[in-house]
Amino acid sequence: MKIIAIGRNYIEHAKELNNPVPKAPMFFMKPETSIIRNNNPFFYPDFSKDVHYETEIVIKICKVGKNIEEKFANRYYDEIGIGIDFTARDLQNICKEKGQPWEIAKAFDGAAPISEFVPKTNFPDLNNINFNLDINGNTVQNGNTKDLIFNFDTLIAYVSRFVTLKIGDLIFTGTPAGVGQVKVGDKLSASIENNLMLDFEVK
Ligand code: ZN
Image (spheres, rainbow, N blue to C red):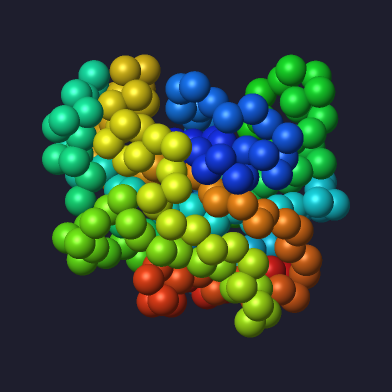
């Protein structure tokens, strides 16, 4: 399986990092080895001094597809979860300056903790899902999928022009504003519609 992650998909987040608001979706990939499941801890990597959390709604692909038309995109994902797109911001900034790919900042081991997944039919409106991240009991990110620049269906249509989507693939759909540093000892708790989905520690 593969993880496709969307960058700059919430206007307020693009602004907070001084990035332009994109005219088309932009994506990068994380390997399977970046996944952390079952609320296992995230081990702070020794190559960064500025690891940031980015809380994102994650959709799970349930059908193989290429060149998917947007009007049929909803048939290609059936479950939703939440994940953290951990980013070594210091390394990413160096990559950006040099015009290099971001993999060392985004694809490292443990850079993608994910929750269990729930049926998308649990949600009456996929374009109106609230989610949030608390760190040590304080809410640091609050998002709603109504603020996505490119919604789930648009993302699937766009990504599948370039990359065949396969069963079990995950799409991290972008983070709202409020990203920031984590430190050793932090406890991260991510919820969708106030249901705690993901709960783990930084070690
Ligand atoms: Zn992200």
